[in-house]
Image 1 (tube, one colour):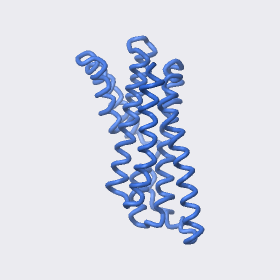
Image 2: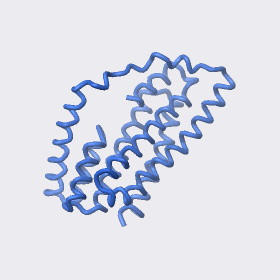
Image 3: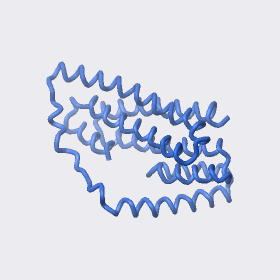
Length: 212
């Protein structure tokens, strides 16, 4: 929701590219650490291994956010405070609505079935493929599924690290694509560079440290 809202805002006011990109990247950084917190609650051993890849992505995203905030502050000082233009543009949804909760429950059950069937038929490669497809829409379901399987011993933790990392990377790629397609050129470029660096760091750390 944040990515789409900021992308549209950047089209309406291109002088806000930096602050819109900051909002998008910091929201992604938050989601990276949220994944880690979920895994910590479910399986601390998996979380320790996952801290390399997902934590690395989060750190890179935060550093990028700091740079974007500096760019936004510099632009604001040069052109005046236009932050008020952003007010009232983002529509909020009822946080107590049952629709999203029911949809997530259905999606979660579906992901559990798909991941287990894929792993049964195609082994680890099947699970990685399921994680990639799941990440296109949501990372929570596959994260919970993988963490539960690692906790009960039915899935090796180094496989779980790669599966969760692939899902998070897939989700970041989708948000980058949305930023490039729906946002202004400057906004899309800033988000693509920021999340691209995060993804690169996450993949390198997953294969060199987390999966060891």
